[in-house]
Image (cartoon, rainbow, N blue to C red; front, side, top):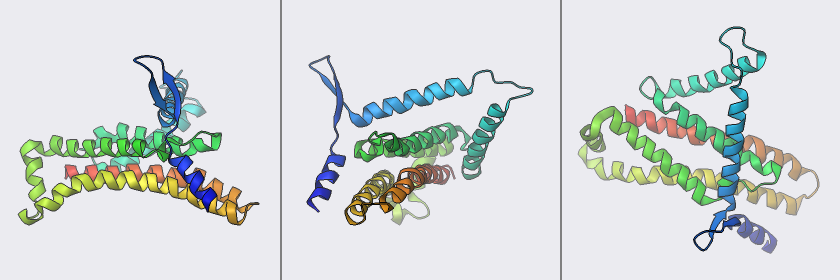
Length: 228
């Protein structure tokens, strides 16, 4: 058990990847470095995939890419409706980032989503977008009035919900990623042979993608609620 606690504290520790030698040294956390790495890879893949796109006689690769993008776009459009289409690029970007961030542990990197600062930042950005969507859809006065709906007595609850939502999004993503690590460590202690490898595939791949889906799905639902 002491070994489990030690490993858990190491996972929670925000290690410094390197230090930028200016202004006395600016430490760059490992989660930030891995995030930059993910951004660079995604930008590179985008540049590769959009090369030589054709309007007529597209290749198999282009058809596959268009099918994937159209499918994801249609999924969010069904949730958000016509008014929320402008927010789909953000949701797709966040979903791709969280998905890759959760899977990158397979390559030996520490997933950025194990850093509560990363999940909190994502949650805060999402809640800002949610409230902004309400302001754009209803106007400033209409957005303020919505806090007193359906009755004035629940005004404090609706205001409190602004702070509850990002906390929920943050802790759900962080807790599930960290929880999978704890389960894996316990399995290694009990059955160190084959079973941990099987569960590692589940937590590193399937569960990581599920958490990305849940985060953007809930954000889309909250945006839809704010718009309506």
